[in-house]
Image (tube, rainbow, N blue to C red; front, side, top):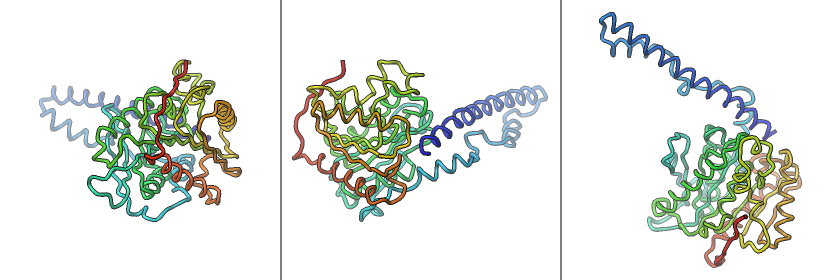
Length: 354
């Protein structure tokens, strides 16, 4: 259900909304040019007349309120549900909203920062970066605003961790792996350079991926980020080397670079990793990929924990409040706090794939 809705909404918007915007802008340019020529040749004051007539035209497509289909409404109803687990103090979390984190010319690339309550001006806390899947083309779905990530942000912040939800260009189903990684790098740079503003301990970060955001877990496995202390993958796609969407549009070298499974090998010293698996995940081959990843991780003896939800479907964390769902979400918060404790830090060297 989840993946079908993602595909329907993404394809429809890419095909219709983006194309319609271009057509509207083209029509307006033609209309303005024609009006300017006409009124100038007629001796009227061009700017005032054209401005008046242009004001009578319908607003551009991007400013019009999009008419939602039944599929849109179903999709938004799913992603806007809060997670099924809560902790005291969530209502007191301070949220810094809609902050530009990159110089890339894309209005969707913003972040929200969730700050724990009652911090002093000099307090620093570990930071969690939530990496969503299903962001759409160029981040047009703005997943940082979805209820699932807003509630995760508040829950983790109320647990004492600064949390960041952001929109990126990773895309779905057409994957833009390099662009998504560029956005994550820009985000991390911005957070670390402005750590005091956001109350962040810039040597104490973690990544948490969801679903199609899984390939960006590679960012913490490449050997260049010692400040990333642990990783969590929640029903995440961890290998895109043979992914049907990636095969259509992404070069082999890029697919390998952004497949976390490619970094699990003999002798690699990787950050501690928690894998969350939904036993009844409906995304084709996702659990097959996860099971292969886990088998390889155990064979190479890396530090890994697994939580399986036997009855869990894709996106179980904001669906029915099953006791196992609550248990897993609670454990995610505990895991992050444990591994972001400086007493647990140890120097690590990582191997990169050949």
